[in-house]
Image 1: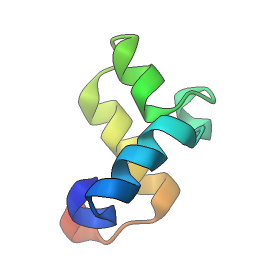
Image 2: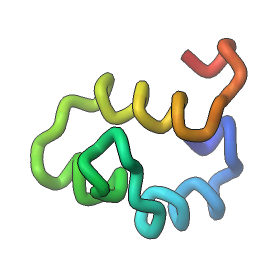
Image 3: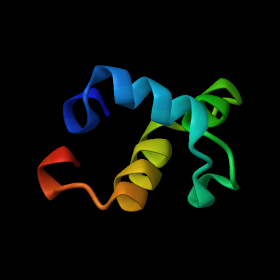
Length: 55
């Protein structure tokens, strides 16, 4: 996320944005609850419509 969004914004986004594909949880919440990191990243990638190079 830091490469795509920058360090400061990535941390803020992970803590504050509720991702629909993660059942409305934030990235931080999903990871703290043991969600698979690849699943979380796919959800982030899709939500932000990131460039394919960030897959």
